[in-house]
Length: 388
Image 1 (cartoon, rainbow, N blue to C red):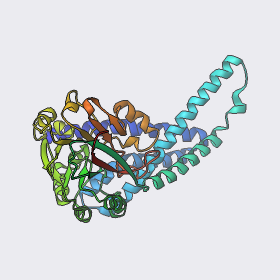
Image 2 (image 1 turned 90 degrees about the vertical axis):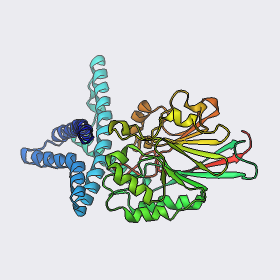
Image 3 (image 1 turned 180 degrees about the vertical axis):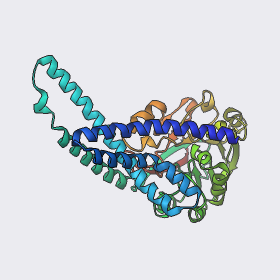
Image 4 (image 1 turned 180 degrees about the horizontal axis):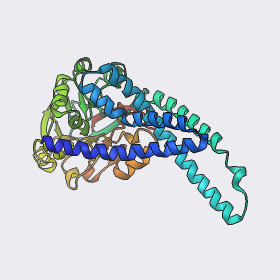
């Protein structure tokens, strides 16, 4: 299993460096050409970008060796730069496409395009400034946790119960950046909702989990009457499954890995491992359909599943699937890519057989501590006796 993990990580790092390094090469060439940089300035810029490309690896290594100050420094500088570089790259690419169209049109019309394309230096500075403004706004938006409320009417909730409230958190990515202050913002919304049950749909942790005991205590303080349930996300495996599960259990959650649990007299909670478990060969419990087939049909069945993928035939076996993972792209225009990969990208979706799916935008942030057009959320699902 160790060799398999190393192979997975090696492939991931190779793809990451090819893409992220390519983005930096594009930005470097654009900066050198637009600003007419000399040899010395080009070397300084190239060195800075090289260090920023390596920043996530430096963070990982520093965490592993207990160098918390180094890890914090490179986490904040590296991930803020990552957000800036991504936005600057998108803006530059969009403007380069515009310039290409302008020059093509000018060629076809035999006219001079210089009047509608600003000088390279001015263009570069303007786009860098706009990217900087977007970074500031996105950093602010990442702190503005919203509460989203969904109401489901069902005869499976007894009349005497009236309303049963489930609160969903997802993709907190607790670690070097999402710490006590950001977690407390999220938990304020959870406490205010007064849940009957709290669920976490994966990626509760991110990176090393050695210094998260205070965060576990904050989560443990919330004790809904019908319990707290969680499933694994892909980052539980990246961070180290044993440590991640230990943290999740210390935070008071029952982790469902191909298992189901009863909550009260009318509700069943089922949970499955993230598909990453197959890569690491650590999947536990029975497959999803087999698990759901074993759940009593007369009870309201909630399926906790990190990735918003609906297996054919499963909607006939559950009432509600709760998922996360996509972050709704977290930083626009990355949303456009996540929509291609995950058609159920965010929000409420009606499935077949009366089943429904809700995909959370996520409560925290991965990588850059920013969100653009995808604010963090805490989701309230009210199950109410009656018919739609």
